[in-house]
Length: 287
Figure 1 (cartoon, rainbow, N blue to C red):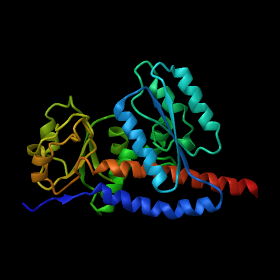
Figure 2: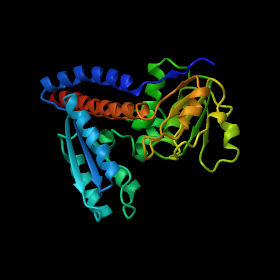
Figure 3: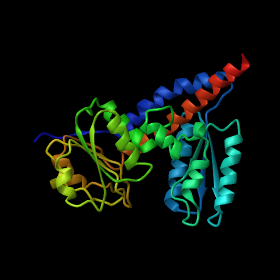
Figure 4: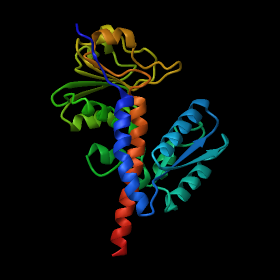
């Protein structure tokens, strides 16, 4: 069997950011700088790393970035008030609440407090519904990154059998809807699915989003399958057993350097689009 196509997320991310640079420059001439605000509750070290990465990515392409750090003991009400203030701030185009939040906080209520036009991470219930129905909303960034990766490499979706392993509201479920909307036949599975290996064996496209290191084995795969590993576990390990999956796949994403960089690029794109939309509204209101 020939070597699989390695899907390079860094290359895709670089392409997206290059396209965004011109838009950001145009907006700056109108006095608008796309601004992303990230809220981090608690002191999760991994979350701090992710927040820093997102802030650095913003600065590198000329966007504005602000980070709000809230203590672990922050209540749901206090978090909702912070989000409400950002919703009302005209200079803020995107709001991202870093997941996960401490267990005592109602995360879904906090997500749904984010104004739809500033929900650049696609985490609100309204945003999920709009994405499923192909209405105007910013999609969840990791599912959007998966679709972007497929499109960048001109890989086929229509008519293919996609098996999504994972059912989270910000990854497994939305990517399933996106694939379905592109005419794939989609099976949604998870870590408790019986005979999962036999189900995966039928898949032309496998999306691993289960949150368990090296969970998907190479022997589960149909020869030549497209493998999209959206997992990121301790030690820079994905949800797929990369070495064995590599030997079976027709195309595969590495971890790190696969879906991750594109996810951040999609967050930047959504924020720039939100700033663009704000500029259009300002022009309409002026006239």
